Image 1 (tube, rainbow, N blue to C red):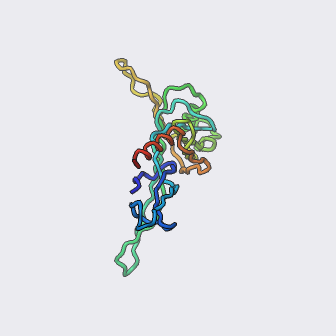
Image 2: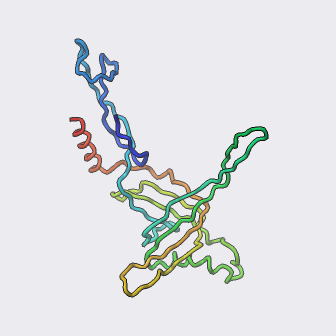
Image 3: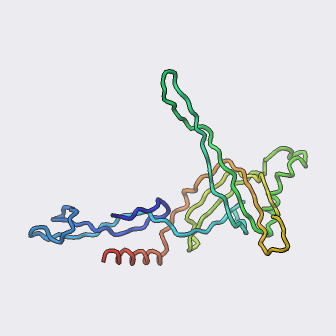
Length: 220
């Protein structure tokens, strides 16, 4: 019985032994069938295998943002609309509005004036009359990329029309403790999509060899 694995991330080839009698597949485990020899052939098939760990980066304006320590999950919820026809006791459900949760970032103390200026742009709305109450030029797309141990990109998500709605540029300061200050950022957005043009790479060579040794040991 093949091992049940979580339906994630890359496809790895494994060996499955299929026994045949005169070219006809059979599930018998005996080495002979009457006076006829049971021949064995190897069939290549695929299974899903989860990756063990990830790194990540945030891209803004086509470049990496240094010092990002954590990125909140990409969440969305769709409202459920209920209705019932006259004379029908069954309550039916239909999808309603879809809401995308804000993207939460934890950003270390890194000198990036351009990115910090963008974060402060919303609270300056109304200071200059031409830009009063306008988000034009403030909304930006950001990109989240996940990569494996070899540094290859394995997943990428584009988050559309982001703008900062909450900032904590300094945490509480305490002279009695030695900590690294982390700034908190909340980005509102209009949705996200996975970039399907980013291919899922094959597992590293060392990992494939390690998996082959495990499979050979299991068959002995």
